[in-house]
Image 1 (spheres, helix red, strand yellow):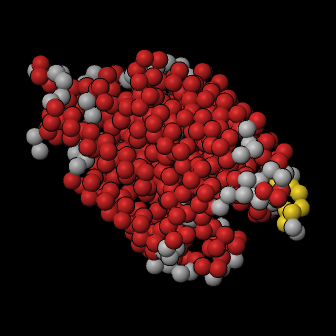
Image 2 (tube, rainbow, N blue to C red):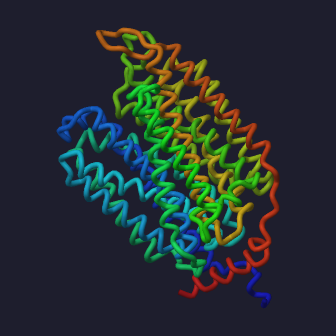
Image 3 (cartoon, one colour):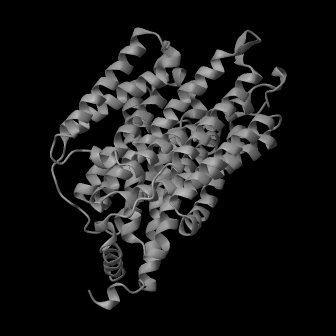
Amino acid sequence: MTSDVSSPAPEAGTSKALLSVIVLCFGGLSAALTQTLVIPIQSELPQLLHTSPANAGWVVTSTLLAAAVSMPIAGRLADMFGKQRVLMVTAALLMVGSLICAQADSLMPMLAGRAFQGLAAGFIPVGISLMREITPPHMTTSAISAMSATLGVGGAIGLPLAAWVAQDFNWHALFWMSAGLALLVSIGVALVVPHVHDATGGRIDVIGALGLAAGLVSTLVAVSKGNTWGWDSPRTLGFLVGGVVVLLVWGWYELRVTDPLCDLRVTAQAPVLLTNLAAVAIGFGMMAQAIVVPQLLQLPTQTGFGLGQTILEAGLWMAPGGLMMMLFAPLSGRLMESWGAKRTLMLGAAVLGIGYVVAVFLMNSPVQLLIASCIASAGVGIGYAAMPTLILNAVPRREAASAVGINALMRSVGTTVAAAVMAMLLTGSTTDFGGFAVPTESAFRVCFVVGAAAAFLGMLIAAAVPLARRRDENRAGAAAATHEEHAAAATR
């Protein structure tokens, strides 16, 4: 290897890498905001789509389910066929789904479009895993941190943005806006993001993909609908037991097949397994505040503890939390360089928990909730940024995207469970208000306590993560390969 290969990347290469990072982060934000895109009009969906409230609820659920399925599958496909190619496909799925929704006036086209939008969530883990290959070493950690933060930032920004568009324009404009963002992402990925030669080949594990999709969908449907159907209803139990059985059979199959969709032996190694368990706890903590705080903000002041904000005002009070996630992503990168990813993850979980503790005592005004939300969001930004680094340091380079996809899936599991638990807590303790049942003040406090417990549990799990040496194949030539690709990209 010549000496200039291991020398710092040229300035032109660094500038191109920075532009690629910006494009990838913009794509991550665009994919993530679709999850909160319809929340401001959720109560109006039955009328807009000429369907029942129960059926309209699937407009949100379908996107979450498709996102959970897409992240590990997109990661595996990226390892096989190249990350830039899969990024193009996911951006195209976002555009197609948005265009379908923009013209939908009934339930079935809307569900199809929302499912396509959910599949675009695979953009985020694939983009994270690509960062190490297209950035110089001094930029990699910060780039991964920024891309990781888009999972939370996109959802936080999407709420007030969607509320404003829905309030001042026709509701279809939400999806025309999403289609426009997807078009910009597609152009940016095609023209700016370099196509590095990172495809490892292999066969597509079709049975594994179908099994994972069936098991995840069945289990997550039971979790997300259990509060509506009843946790002891045959339908909930059937989906839950069926999903768990399918996932167990899927795991048995994956351990015995060549080129599995997910290498469970790698996933079961302590650094990866514990990081993924921490992801569930921290994902739970992130979603809990996103559900509870807007409801508390929008309750009428006549309840004695509600804060009387409109949907748009509630979204604007929540928006600074998203900015905090983005602001703390670079700080997380610097912390990882000095403290290591493990301690940084512990710090993020601890800050998230502190935010909930603050909320228990400060929930009497929008400003107080803003302070608590910003603290919690800072913790999410720090923690979300550290997890992919722990994963990438512990897995073979050829499985980087797949492993990051599984980690993103575990975050999604945490958010889905949080939505179900928060709904159960809020509906389990209610009081009558003008003929309607509304959650009690104590129910909100319990939600904050549970969120804090989840965050601190994530901190304890992170403390148990062993410090894994980076794999030999990551270490022996990773820097050289990065610089070679960087130099090549600079000459294009």
